[in-house]
Amino acid sequence: MKKVVLITGASAGIGKATAIFLAANGYTVYGAARRVDRLNDLIPLEIKVIPMDVTDEDSMVNGVNQIINEEGKIDILINNAGYGSYGAIEDVPIADAKQQLEVNLFGLARLIELVLPKMREHHYGKIVNISSIGGKMATPFGGWYHASKFAIEGLSDSLRNEVKQFGIDVIVIEPGGIKSEWGQIAMDSLIKTSGNTAYKTLAGKFSKAFEQTVDKNPEPVIIAELIKKGIEAKKPKARYSAGYMAAPALFMAWFLPDRLKDKVIMSQVK
Image (cartoon, rainbow, N blue to C red; front, side):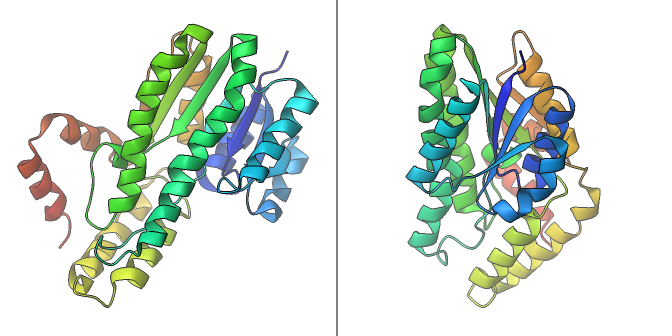
């Protein structure tokens, strides 16, 4: 019997690539997104599309219930929905900070709550949380984004040891740079928020440095392949990473003292 997968944020980037890749490899895939019109091209690929806003309780409950009613189960949840709210911490309105956490963290956590009962009932499940190398080390201007991803790392560690007894695995994916619309949205947010404040000079340098890395980013299918590797492993690792600068960034996060790490990061912002 085919495994049933729910992927949030399936309208672009990693989410869309993963939906397509898993469907092509024999999974029953439900692609969910707030922008439903951007899911239409998934339908001919035998991917089932559902509207879902991870900041809306009814939307999440209805989506999960629809899948369970149609399939009787959700075997794999891939929490991919998210974005980067960039700007100096002093400049970012707290309302925007709360929205960042609502999408990247609390929506993820609520979906986990909704799928766990059926996973426990079947004594099987894979929960894949898309974090980032930005969940292990932080750059200027990404404070609230990094806060959300650091939180996902800790939440996943706690959850992993809670649900292991029920035959459920929790897997964290830590992408580095990947070709997607994420970067442009984040940089637009940065310039809008801090492009005309006391931080404008550093913000301009940061945006320029970021844009110079875009061409080095691999296609998002590299993360789809990593997810497939994790969900098909008999004993999956707690974390998998891939993408531009993923390995060196995680090495620095693990081994370098904070002061030296800061110097390395800021040396790239010229």
